[in-house]
Image 1 (cartoon, rainbow, N blue to C red):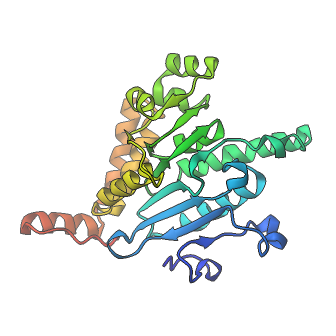
Image 2 (image 1 turned 45 degrees about the vertical axis):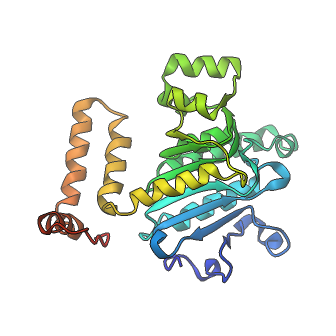
Image 3 (image 1 turned 60 degrees about the horizontal axis):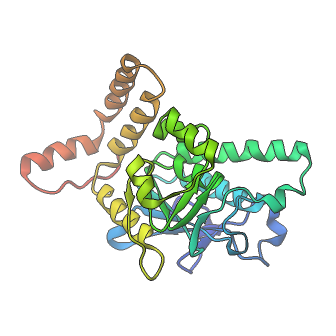
Length: 283
Protein backbone atom coordinates (compact mmCIF):
# COMPACT_ATOMS: atom_id res chain seq x y z
CA UNK A 1 0.00 0.00 0.00
CA UNK A 2 1.03 3.61 -0.41
CA UNK A 3 1.40 4.62 3.23
CA UNK A 4 2.28 8.23 2.38
CA UNK A 5 -0.91 8.76 0.39
CA UNK A 6 -4.09 10.12 1.97
CA UNK A 7 -6.74 7.73 3.26
CA UNK A 8 -8.95 8.44 0.24
CA UNK A 9 -6.52 6.47 -1.92
CA UNK A 10 -6.37 3.43 0.33
CA UNK A 11 -9.12 1.44 -1.32
CA UNK A 12 -9.60 -2.30 -1.01
CA UNK A 13 -9.58 -2.97 -4.76
CA UNK A 14 -6.23 -3.37 -6.59
CA UNK A 15 -6.54 -0.15 -8.60
CA UNK A 16 -7.09 3.03 -6.60
CA UNK A 17 -8.88 5.98 -8.15
CA UNK A 18 -8.27 9.68 -7.79
CA UNK A 19 -11.22 12.04 -8.13
CA UNK A 20 -10.31 15.40 -9.64
CA UNK A 21 -10.88 18.18 -7.10
CA UNK A 22 -12.69 20.42 -9.56
CA UNK A 23 -15.08 17.61 -10.48
CA UNK A 24 -15.80 16.25 -7.01
CA UNK A 25 -19.56 16.24 -7.53
CA UNK A 26 -19.16 13.74 -10.37
CA UNK A 27 -16.56 11.56 -8.69
CA UNK A 28 -19.12 9.13 -7.28
CA UNK A 29 -21.01 8.61 -10.55
CA UNK A 30 -18.30 8.27 -13.17
CA UNK A 31 -15.43 5.88 -13.77
CA UNK A 32 -12.09 7.44 -12.75
CA UNK A 33 -9.88 8.30 -15.69
CA UNK A 34 -6.64 7.94 -13.72
CA UNK A 35 -6.05 5.03 -11.33
CA UNK A 36 -3.03 4.21 -9.19
CA UNK A 37 -1.67 0.83 -8.14
CA UNK A 38 1.29 0.08 -5.88
CA UNK A 39 2.66 -3.39 -6.58
CA UNK A 40 3.47 -5.71 -3.71
CA UNK A 41 5.69 -8.70 -2.96
CA UNK A 42 8.91 -8.82 -4.99
CA UNK A 43 7.63 -5.86 -7.06
CA UNK A 44 7.15 -3.59 -4.06
CA UNK A 45 8.48 -0.17 -4.98
CA UNK A 46 6.92 -0.21 -8.46
CA UNK A 47 3.84 1.98 -8.82
CA UNK A 48 1.62 2.13 -11.90
CA UNK A 49 -0.57 4.89 -13.25
CA UNK A 50 -3.39 3.47 -15.36
CA UNK A 51 -4.89 5.86 -17.93
CA UNK A 52 -8.46 4.70 -18.48
CA UNK A 53 -10.66 6.94 -20.63
CA UNK A 54 -11.88 4.50 -23.30
CA UNK A 55 -14.65 6.67 -24.74
CA UNK A 56 -12.07 9.26 -25.81
CA UNK A 57 -9.02 7.00 -26.36
CA UNK A 58 -7.28 8.51 -23.33
CA UNK A 59 -7.45 12.00 -24.84
CA UNK A 60 -6.09 14.76 -22.63
CA UNK A 61 -9.32 16.29 -21.36
CA UNK A 62 -9.83 18.52 -18.34
CA UNK A 63 -10.78 15.74 -15.90
CA UNK A 64 -8.00 13.46 -17.20
CA UNK A 65 -5.37 16.18 -16.72
CA UNK A 66 -6.69 17.17 -13.29
CA UNK A 67 -6.65 13.60 -12.02
CA UNK A 68 -3.19 12.93 -13.43
CA UNK A 69 -1.78 16.11 -11.85
CA UNK A 70 -3.30 15.12 -8.51
CA UNK A 71 -1.84 11.62 -8.74
CA UNK A 72 1.64 13.00 -9.47
CA UNK A 73 1.38 15.49 -6.61
CA UNK A 74 0.58 12.69 -4.17
CA UNK A 75 3.09 10.17 -5.49
CA UNK A 76 6.09 12.48 -5.69
CA UNK A 77 6.04 12.78 -1.87
CA UNK A 78 6.09 9.01 -1.35
CA UNK A 79 9.67 7.79 -0.91
CA UNK A 80 8.50 4.19 -1.36
CA UNK A 81 7.85 4.84 -5.07
CA UNK A 82 11.05 3.59 -6.68
CA UNK A 83 9.78 3.32 -10.28
CA UNK A 84 6.62 4.78 -11.85
CA UNK A 85 5.05 3.12 -14.92
CA UNK A 86 2.51 4.89 -17.13
CA UNK A 87 0.23 2.42 -18.89
CA UNK A 88 -3.11 2.41 -20.67
CA UNK A 89 -6.29 0.57 -19.77
CA UNK A 90 -7.60 1.11 -23.31
CA UNK A 91 -6.47 -1.60 -25.72
CA UNK A 92 -4.62 -0.32 -28.79
CA UNK A 93 -4.19 3.22 -27.43
CA UNK A 94 -1.61 4.81 -25.17
CA UNK A 95 -2.87 8.40 -25.41
CA UNK A 96 -4.57 10.03 -28.41
CA UNK A 97 -3.41 13.54 -27.52
CA UNK A 98 -5.63 16.58 -27.14
CA UNK A 99 -9.37 16.19 -26.63
CA UNK A 100 -10.43 18.19 -29.69
CA UNK A 101 -14.16 17.80 -29.01
CA UNK A 102 -13.73 19.33 -25.58
CA UNK A 103 -11.40 22.00 -26.89
CA UNK A 104 -13.78 23.24 -29.59
CA UNK A 105 -16.20 24.24 -26.83
CA UNK A 106 -13.57 26.43 -25.17
CA UNK A 107 -13.02 30.12 -25.71
CA UNK A 108 -9.64 31.28 -27.00
CA UNK A 109 -8.72 32.33 -23.47
CA UNK A 110 -9.70 28.94 -22.07
CA UNK A 111 -7.67 27.15 -24.73
CA UNK A 112 -4.59 29.17 -23.81
CA UNK A 113 -5.03 28.40 -20.13
CA UNK A 114 -5.58 24.69 -20.77
CA UNK A 115 -2.52 24.39 -23.02
CA UNK A 116 -0.52 25.99 -20.23
CA UNK A 117 -1.85 23.34 -17.85
CA UNK A 118 -0.80 20.62 -20.30
CA UNK A 119 2.73 22.00 -20.41
CA UNK A 120 2.72 22.03 -16.63
CA UNK A 121 1.62 18.39 -16.59
CA UNK A 122 4.46 17.33 -18.89
CA UNK A 123 6.93 19.25 -16.73
CA UNK A 124 5.60 17.49 -13.62
CA UNK A 125 6.12 14.11 -15.27
CA UNK A 126 9.63 15.03 -16.39
CA UNK A 127 10.51 16.31 -12.90
CA UNK A 128 9.14 13.28 -11.06
CA UNK A 129 11.95 12.27 -8.68
CA UNK A 130 11.90 8.51 -9.39
CA UNK A 131 12.48 6.90 -12.80
CA UNK A 132 9.41 6.89 -15.04
CA UNK A 133 8.59 4.43 -17.83
CA UNK A 134 5.99 4.85 -20.59
CA UNK A 135 4.51 1.48 -21.62
CA UNK A 136 3.16 2.37 -25.07
CA UNK A 137 0.83 -0.40 -26.16
CA UNK A 138 -0.85 1.64 -28.87
CA UNK A 139 -1.17 5.07 -30.48
CA UNK A 140 0.65 8.03 -28.91
CA UNK A 141 -0.30 11.15 -30.87
CA UNK A 142 0.49 14.80 -30.22
CA UNK A 143 0.24 15.36 -26.49
CA UNK A 144 0.24 11.59 -26.00
CA UNK A 145 3.74 11.38 -27.42
CA UNK A 146 4.73 14.42 -25.37
CA UNK A 147 3.60 12.53 -22.27
CA UNK A 148 5.78 9.59 -23.26
CA UNK A 149 8.73 11.85 -24.08
CA UNK A 150 8.44 13.41 -20.63
CA UNK A 151 9.11 9.95 -19.16
CA UNK A 152 12.67 8.75 -18.64
CA UNK A 153 12.24 5.50 -20.57
CA UNK A 154 9.85 4.38 -23.31
CA UNK A 155 8.76 0.91 -24.44
CA UNK A 156 6.73 0.45 -27.65
CA UNK A 157 4.48 -2.47 -28.52
CA UNK A 158 2.09 -2.04 -31.45
CA UNK A 159 2.53 1.70 -31.62
CA UNK A 160 2.33 4.73 -33.85
CA UNK A 161 3.23 8.24 -32.74
CA UNK A 162 3.97 11.80 -33.75
CA UNK A 163 4.28 15.28 -32.24
CA UNK A 164 6.39 17.41 -29.89
CA UNK A 165 8.33 20.54 -30.97
CA UNK A 166 10.54 20.74 -27.87
CA UNK A 167 11.13 17.29 -26.42
CA UNK A 168 11.28 15.56 -29.80
CA UNK A 169 14.35 17.50 -31.11
CA UNK A 170 16.07 16.99 -27.76
CA UNK A 171 15.54 13.27 -28.21
CA UNK A 172 16.20 12.85 -31.94
CA UNK A 173 18.08 15.97 -33.00
CA UNK A 174 16.79 19.08 -34.74
CA UNK A 175 16.83 17.98 -38.39
CA UNK A 176 15.05 14.67 -37.87
CA UNK A 177 12.50 16.19 -35.50
CA UNK A 178 11.71 18.88 -38.07
CA UNK A 179 11.21 16.26 -40.76
CA UNK A 180 8.77 14.30 -38.61
CA UNK A 181 6.86 17.39 -37.48
CA UNK A 182 6.74 19.06 -40.92
CA UNK A 183 5.48 15.89 -42.61
CA UNK A 184 3.20 14.67 -39.79
CA UNK A 185 4.68 11.22 -40.35
CA UNK A 186 3.73 8.44 -37.95
CA UNK A 187 6.29 5.93 -36.77
CA UNK A 188 5.73 2.36 -35.68
CA UNK A 189 7.58 0.83 -32.74
CA UNK A 190 10.50 -0.62 -34.71
CA UNK A 191 11.06 2.65 -36.58
CA UNK A 192 10.92 4.56 -33.30
CA UNK A 193 13.53 2.27 -31.74
CA UNK A 194 15.81 2.56 -34.76
CA UNK A 195 15.72 6.35 -34.45
CA UNK A 196 16.29 6.24 -30.69
CA UNK A 197 12.85 7.54 -29.79
CA UNK A 198 12.08 4.50 -27.61
CA UNK A 199 14.37 2.28 -25.57
CA UNK A 200 12.78 -1.00 -26.66
CA UNK A 201 10.24 -2.17 -29.24
CA UNK A 202 8.50 -5.49 -28.64
CA UNK A 203 6.18 -7.67 -30.68
CA UNK A 204 2.61 -7.33 -29.45
CA UNK A 205 0.95 -10.25 -27.64
CA UNK A 206 -2.66 -11.45 -27.64
CA UNK A 207 -3.44 -9.50 -24.48
CA UNK A 208 -2.19 -6.27 -26.08
CA UNK A 209 0.15 -5.46 -23.18
CA UNK A 210 3.57 -6.50 -24.47
CA UNK A 211 5.07 -3.04 -23.87
CA UNK A 212 3.76 -3.07 -20.31
CA UNK A 213 5.28 -6.49 -19.66
CA UNK A 214 8.66 -5.25 -20.94
CA UNK A 215 8.32 -2.06 -18.90
CA UNK A 216 7.62 -4.14 -15.80
CA UNK A 217 10.73 -6.25 -16.45
CA UNK A 218 12.78 -3.06 -16.84
CA UNK A 219 11.36 -1.67 -13.59
CA UNK A 220 12.35 -4.91 -11.87
CA UNK A 221 15.94 -4.32 -13.02
CA UNK A 222 15.90 -0.87 -11.45
CA UNK A 223 14.43 -1.99 -8.11
CA UNK A 224 17.61 -3.59 -6.65
CA UNK A 225 19.63 -0.41 -7.24
CA UNK A 226 20.23 2.14 -4.48
CA UNK A 227 17.18 4.43 -4.66
CA UNK A 228 18.94 7.62 -3.57
CA UNK A 229 21.75 7.09 -6.08
CA UNK A 230 19.20 6.41 -8.84
CA UNK A 231 17.27 9.60 -8.06
CA UNK A 232 20.44 11.68 -7.89
CA UNK A 233 21.64 10.12 -11.14
CA UNK A 234 18.41 11.27 -12.78
CA UNK A 235 18.95 14.80 -11.48
CA UNK A 236 22.55 14.87 -12.67
CA UNK A 237 21.61 13.71 -16.18
CA UNK A 238 18.55 15.95 -16.58
CA UNK A 239 20.23 19.09 -15.25
CA UNK A 240 23.55 18.33 -16.87
CA UNK A 241 22.00 18.09 -20.33
CA UNK A 242 20.79 21.68 -20.01
CA UNK A 243 24.25 23.20 -19.50
CA UNK A 244 27.83 22.98 -20.80
CA UNK A 245 30.04 20.03 -19.84
CA UNK A 246 31.95 21.92 -17.13
CA UNK A 247 28.72 22.97 -15.43
CA UNK A 248 27.41 19.44 -15.87
CA UNK A 249 30.43 18.03 -14.06
CA UNK A 250 29.79 20.48 -11.22
CA UNK A 251 26.19 19.26 -11.00
CA UNK A 252 27.42 15.66 -10.91
CA UNK A 253 29.80 16.57 -8.08
CA UNK A 254 27.00 18.18 -6.06
CA UNK A 255 24.77 15.14 -6.56
CA UNK A 256 27.52 12.75 -5.50
CA UNK A 257 28.20 14.88 -2.43
CA UNK A 258 24.59 14.33 -1.36
CA UNK A 259 25.05 10.58 -1.70
CA UNK A 260 28.25 10.34 0.37
CA UNK A 261 26.66 10.49 3.87
CA UNK A 262 23.81 8.09 3.08
CA UNK A 263 23.35 4.70 4.70
CA UNK A 264 22.77 3.21 1.26
CA UNK A 265 26.27 4.13 0.05
CA UNK A 266 27.84 2.50 3.09
CA UNK A 267 25.59 -0.55 2.65
CA UNK A 268 26.64 -0.85 -0.98
CA UNK A 269 30.31 -0.81 -0.02
CA UNK A 270 29.76 -3.34 2.77
CA UNK A 271 27.81 -5.66 0.48
CA UNK A 272 30.57 -5.52 -2.14
CA UNK A 273 33.21 -6.26 0.48
CA UNK A 274 31.21 -9.14 1.96
CA UNK A 275 30.15 -10.48 -1.45
CA UNK A 276 26.41 -10.38 -0.70
CA UNK A 277 23.39 -8.61 -2.19
CA UNK A 278 22.92 -5.11 -0.73
CA UNK A 279 19.87 -4.21 1.34
CA UNK A 280 19.11 -0.59 0.53
CA UNK A 281 16.67 1.36 2.69
CA UNK A 282 16.55 4.69 0.88
CA UNK A 283 18.39 6.65 3.59
